[in-house]
Length: 391
Image (cartoon, rainbow, N blue to C red; front, side, top):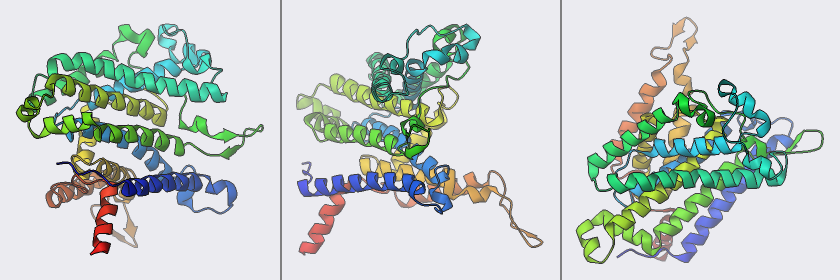
């Protein structure tokens, strides 16, 4: 029987999230109030790049965990749905003034509108918030629609066969979006840039000087809202049905659970949030192109899920930060040749970082078979502390 999480633990977890968001805003704006801030807290530092990428990847990992960890469906199509979300967002948000410049190879775009422009442009609050938000939601919807059609045939498959089918779908999507005949919409093999990014949410005064930075706060806010919706879903009757399917399909069907319906629902919901993470990825890198959405991206997301714990939302979030920080920041010094006096430190050279990173991952997987969190969540940790105190 699934134990109900205590309300007190949930409130403590919510408080931790609010404090975390407040700290993000404080760290990001510290340079506006202090002249001599540490280098690591400057807006261009690697810390904020890692944090933004963490928000994007965390949502992608949680969406995959919903499908793999809570429903038991092994899908490798995450990169394909992220690609759909990224392109949908980019196509719908390129300002009309920049369309001819972006689609120069095709004499303009076939999409004769821009969502931010419909609400007044990215320079206005309505245009930025409503236009971008609507584009992000539509990015998720497009991914979910594709998932529904793809799910009709592939969800009849199981285990490795489902993984291979969804992996093939992701590769097909990547090839189609680079097809030159679709250039007036997807810009062919060229990237779609000039789109609204997280930096557009920084608040400026009349002189154009930034008075409040929100470029790191916004991606975390979006990711937290989406992850909170997924958590509510998991704790609902639908979530319990997903878990029943994961444990035993025959028993779940005997209890009256419609396997096809719930599998398709889980697949579409997971793809919806993967599409939103794809839109956020486009905002993070300031463009949309098919090149980043390879199978390697799916494997990265899957690795994060495994390291964090299959069936743990908290684990996926923690593992995302550790993975991104190690790969993009903490181990960077290993790629730099170092000379101390006349002695050159051996092995330190370009590429050595990934060797050490791979060894670290192997150690984690070997000694933490169930991942960092197993199947526990943040409220469970506080519940455990209360039990120990009571003893």
